[in-house]
Length: 182
Ligand code: IMP
Ligand code: MG
Image 1 (spheres, rainbow, N blue to C red):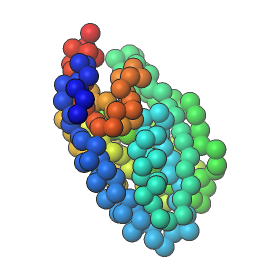
Image 2 (cartoon, rainbow, N blue to C red):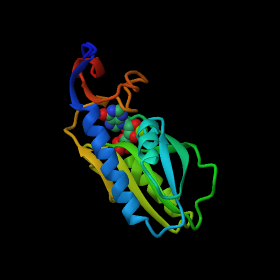
Image 3 (cartoon, helix red, strand yellow):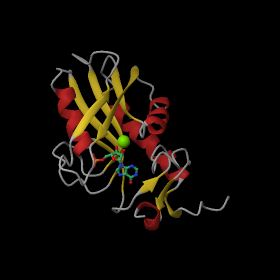
Image 4 (cartoon, rainbow, N blue to C red):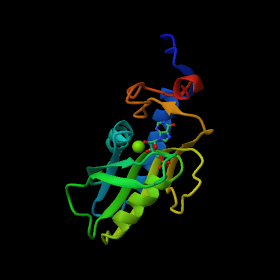
């Protein structure tokens, strides 16, 4: 194996662990929606693009993929926690069965915002799927399909980034604290 990049502390979730868990999540989704005409998987950019690609390719039930993107205002600023929609879905979600696919849930603000935004558009149903959960301080929506729970550290890889770096690593690794605290 190649040496770990010097910015990285350790691998938290290996490529193999991710592969196994993504298959399990897909199997669970497949079972739950076996009687459904089709589902819409809405990936949240950019972080969820790799997870969504792997998850969707494990599904044998009719599904389409779509995307949304949000930006969050400075976490320490006056509008702490406020989320802004920067890219919306291409297809309307009314009367559709929606699964929101997120990379990681930290405070839960992003998922809360997206869940309530989509909920207001009268989908037939809405569920959430996240690869990773951290602390979920203000989360009042359930994570219906959850891959892993990790400690409150900054992680990168498998779609997750630090200032757009390390995003395409095949595993999830902890970033050294001196890298993100400098
Ligand atoms: P929340 O709104 O606080 O739950 O933050 C969720 C968003 O913050 C995620 O969709 C990620 O884009 C980003 N995020 C939170 N923690 C991490 C991390 O450890 N690594 C990379 N991105 C993260
Ligand atoms: Mg994200």
